[in-house]
Length: 267
Image (cartoon, rainbow, N blue to C red; front, side, top):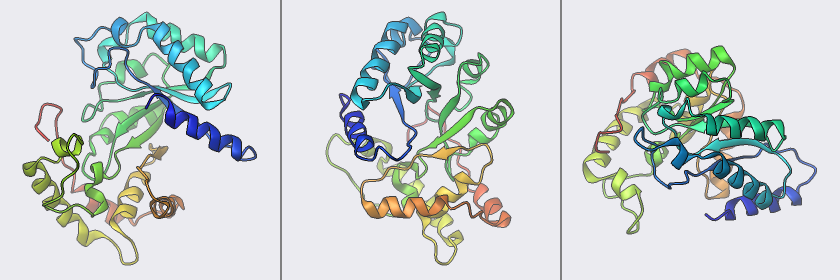
């Protein structure tokens, strides 16, 4: 928070100046309301001066002259026709303060960005996609593939369930949002589904690697962004990026574990 992650990343980049890293960051909504909703005005959520100010702040935190990918942290397609954000994006690209611009889509609303993509100003879309949440493959992914828009798959482990480490008694510190997401009923339903996926894990592979390989197998997906808190997590997750495909029959079997959920459903 408060740019700390960007500052740490900037220090790491300067310590390894010979390496080329692609840097992406996000702009929070000015009204600080998640998720984005149609009843919120674009002028209150992402006014152009807010987009510019946060981009300049991120550049200062990172110690960089250009951000490879700048993204809006929330979105509602009700804002697609607003000229303010469009002007800000166009200006930042023209001034070479950002190379590319993306939108992070609300959970379980993968088509709530299609009008924005049609403007031609959006270079990437970040969306929840995993073994359970496969709805983006219906409409969003084909559109992105046809128009050269990058796809960043987030929440690859369904907030931890697809790591195989959760149990029916799992709980988190008071105030941790996972206590809400994994309320007792949802946690039990989720782990029932995880139990049905486990027999598909090949010998010599762990569930998290299978989850990542499933995501990366989709041709429209450019990359995925798993959370990593320990070096062993980094090593394990990197193993999934070797380009080795999963067998078609295994992919077909994993697709049967699709679980369509809606934003209005209680997790």
